Image 1 (cartoon, rainbow, N blue to C red):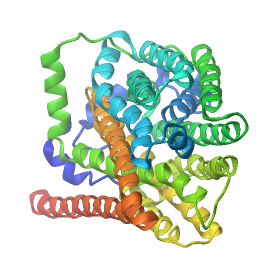
Image 2: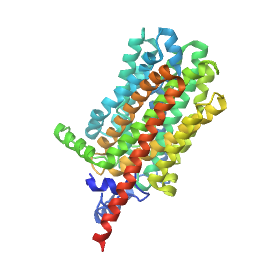
Image 3: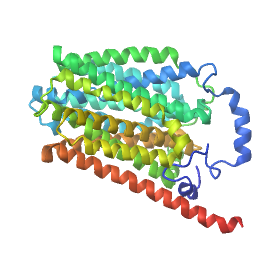
Length: 441
């Protein structure tokens, strides 16, 4: 783990340097690179394209399954006579279960392998997904969604650790960006698919269609993912796990990254849980299929997450975060208008800002943790999906209490939190650099 002092020097997310000098001694870093470079994947090397395609498919399946009920919440509410807050638990239960289970399942990946954990996780989640359409009540639907979220917990953190181990550091941001881009495609395709299928045949058929889409992605993943070449199995030692987790939580940089991920996802979860209710009501009164098509704006997230590496190269990690959070805030404010075009443009900005910020923060976690990468990524994923659960539930409550303006207010509060954390990291980094100058002289 990097020492505590490194947290300030590497900011809320550090500058564009490959890694913090304080994190890895130069000599060991050079010798390690010399040993590992030939076996690591990078663009142009054999296996990189297969790996990218496999994890892209896994990302599609993950978000399609995890948020399969989100675009259907008005229909679920009508079917079971539930309020927006009650129906939102079909989303929050899945993301909350994922957040709780991601750390223990990431520990299993340290013992049994990232590839094996991702395969098992995706398989179980798909099987549960094929059962979800037959839920006889809202309670059963929420319970099955919780099981599905718990099953999916083995995939995100294992994927991040797999990439950190198998991809060369200079290509890591781009590789994680592609995985996150798969998330955005899954979120988009799942919502569009469910919207139109629900309009024609009902929400249960829509959930069945998502299950079939995820099954296809799981098959692609199984046959395309390359074997791990740099994974070393560890032992299942609870005390060692506690020490590793404690070390990560003691690192100020990682704590800031976890908080940033949670706050970004609070905004995203609130907006996309509630937007369907807003668009089916006056003054828009859109049909279910058209509401599902609104999620085409996820394509913007695909582009912004894949471009995160270029943003970091140009602006540095702090600059990329400031741009992401400013874009998100502008989208929230624009979405307050009662014109459909303004709402759509607001969603575009929110989506672009969220996915860019998420790609920068998540890749920074993988680069910062020099040991226990799966646990470091798992803690980020826990914070991230707890933010999603909180955003979905609180966003629905805010919408019930104050309409769309209430949901936007919640989002702006979370955005303010990201800005505050990033500013704190920036100032701490400057103070540390000033303190080091006399010592250097």
